[in-house]
Image 1 (cartoon, one colour):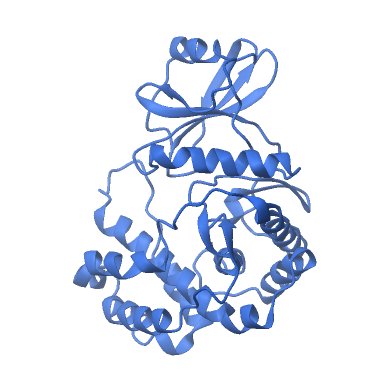
Image 2 (cartoon, rainbow, N blue to C red):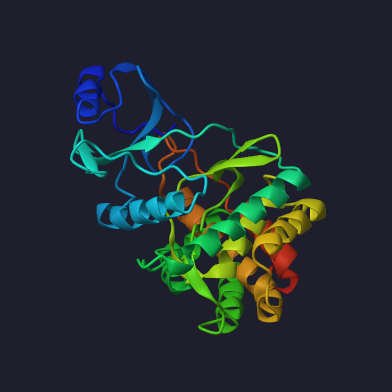
Amino acid sequence: MAVYTQVSAEALAAFLARYDVGELVSAKGIAEGVENSNYLVETTRDRFILTLYEKRVDAGDLPYFMGLLDHLADKGLAVPPAIKDRDGVEIQELNGRPACLIKFLSGVSVSHPTPNQARAAGEAMGQMHRAVADFALDRPNSMGADTWRPLFDRCGASLDQIASGLHADLGFALDATLANWPGDELDHCAIHADLFPDNVLMLGDKVTGLIDFYFACTDIRIYDLAVMHSAWAFDASGAHYDAAVGEALIAGYEASFPLTQAERATFATLAAGACIRFTLSRAWDWLNTPADALVMRKDPLAYVRRLRHYAPDLVKHVA
């Protein structure tokens, strides 16, 4: 469930009165997602998404996120920009939370993508990366490679509560991956950094929207593809790799943005880093989220199994 802040019909109607969007007809909480509170809002004119930004999203980052969405929308990409009110304001406040009214995009996220869908999604990411070539804003990656060691240290030996040997495996993998992590020799740009299948809307084999840009940042461009590859090309357990999906994803990306030789040579390291990043963030949540919390914890070991695919010598203890 992802409705942490309840909004009454009266408060929502008053909020909508700031906009030229018609009058409130209905609002329904959206269960998907774990970062923010989301509502599907229908008015007498259209449908919208209302997002209230919870504590895990820094309100100071919202101008970057909204600026990126506006930039991509202006370039013709299928992304959901925030709607401006009558005074031209995008970022509002509702029930004590920063809030935005966002354009509704049709489509559904797929849980088991086909190669054709993966190819289309990869092509959409490549188009996004081309579109940000002249995007001027910058935001450091809040979950970038320089944050992994501190997060690993905070998790500490408690990692072995998740699986015996996890602390040793992650420590070893972290040392090896960071020692080979690329720097300025690879292209950097604004990236999504979280383009899982549930953040891509599709109708059949067509991408109708890229959504949830709340980890977007400036980082290694091809790292974005590595994150996407690790999310799309495996089953939910992380144990089974679908080569057809993985290859189609990269082929689609290259249809928009061909990889350099250096990017190809570094891709496995970047993908291993993506696996470490999501293992650590999931492990932290696993160890620190109460069992009765509304947020459903995600299995950290699903990304350890993916890590074994990209760097088999780095996982020695965890099955």
